[in-house]
Image 1 (spheres, rainbow over the protein chains, first blue to last red):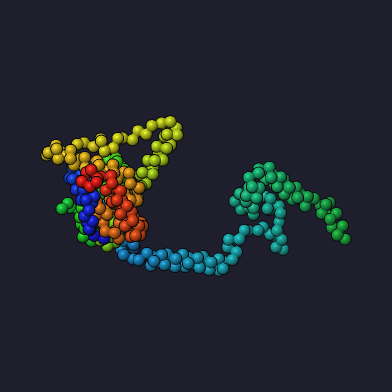
Image 2 (tube, one colour; image 1 turned 90 degrees about the vertical axis):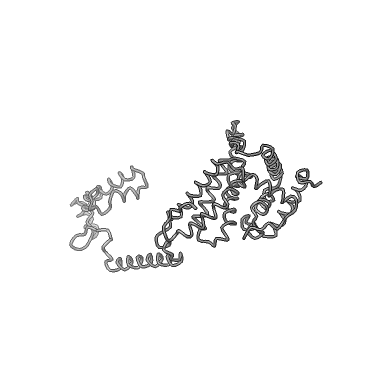
Length: 161
Length: 189
């Protein structure tokens, strides 16, 4: 891709001569700005923004391979960790001695950090509708009260018989 | 030769790049000025092309630099022309005026020994510029790169992003048209 001036017709000769004369006439301030631009470009060679390993000459495919292997290893390690302690991240459920869930504890724990269902979860369920949250909370309180009533509990047992 | 402030391991490459840029900067500026007709825009285009060449293609073989540099420059010039057209359309739509400076005319007159010689050179370049301005963009690019910058057909094709056949066609048409337009200046009827 070297310079070749094979065409030497009158048009080319005229154009080249006019162009070369014009280049000779470029003024000093413009030449200084061009030189400053060149210096800036050359200085940017030393402020290479590529990562260190690429600057050291490691091929891009090798770097990409290492990154992929690292991500894969991390994923396997996380998955293995989950298998080793399956209940570690599961939500804590309040249970009585027989292992059944106790609704009153669920209700009392609403709003506390130990809540079985946190307000944030409820807000998520409500989808941003605040009155839904109120209704839900009132219902839970009502059913808890209902279960504590002895006559209702006895009646329920009577029907069972 | 100016000191090149880079790390020791980069010094030879930087020196070579510096030599290359020093060699092309004035011509590149004048070529950019042909397309943009604005001194500051032409300087910006050349500066941008230098930076991009250094950052992206410094590790390519040095014999490819010229074509790559002119490709970057041509793209930059085209972008600026497009932006300028868009700006003037928008301003025209809103009834405003483009306050862009009147370009080359603003440049201070260079010192020249012989006023007659200066007039003659200016006239020749003016005639060439006017003739080039009438050519389609691709023909103008082919002529400028091939004839004024002196790239060979392969280099011009790389710089223009087209085939060598296209370069030959554009160039031949450009020369034919310029011969008609510049007949009086070059002594051809």
